[in-house]
Image 1: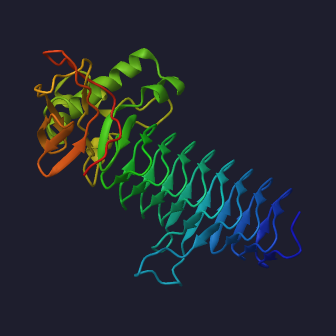
Image 2 (image 1 turned 90 degrees about the horizontal axis):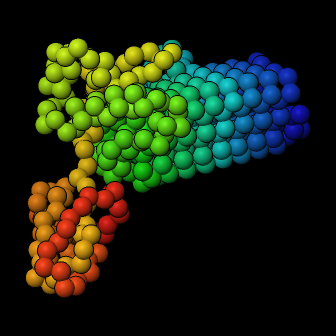
Length: 328
């Protein structure tokens, strides 16, 4: 059903069983396949192709001009959206910025409210993009990635398959597949829960662990790790186990912006400390000390720590998962 107040361009191609809400505007170069639902006050302009079974929320803007000062309104570019995507309220998806270029979104993706997909982005399949995520131009997001709310991604970077990015983080370097990414250009390990849910076998998970150790724990830079992987009989390790019917892609060899770094783990005590006990902990800015006042000190940064003082003479230290901390 098409609402009486909707404006449909004369050249638009609308499939069967398509619903278009009130005050929506559909341009003349738009193609919408069967079984789609378009909410109220949606604007779809320019050359846009939308596949079957998509749901587009109220106030979304698709096919708008890219936010590029060099863009000419006469440049022919487009947006291509696959099938069964959910695009929630106020999302913006801009078309390509150069002639005959495309912004592409695959199948079965979920874009939550206020997400922004910049010009020439390529989104794979089954990607979840939470509220207020910002993707700059030419960002590539591989299949089954999860981008936490409010996270931002610099132009021309690549986000690997099955990664999970912490909300509120910022990234300007490529993120390898299968990792947990957080803060500003850091990774904190592998997304093992996501790998299990995706059906990776124990052997495949072990291979990914070896690849992670080679990149981040061997003390080698990316080029050296790549050369070492080629020297051995298992050069496939460095491809990070791209799986089954997926094309094998060596992200680390193709990176344009370099890879994100490995984040430092925050340490905490498993036993209580005496007031005189001093422990050392690795932080982003080198070594720090735990003061008796319960604060880590490293360089110019001071981070509040949770310490409990008791009668123990020694502190037994153990690494824990990264936790949020307040910087002063």
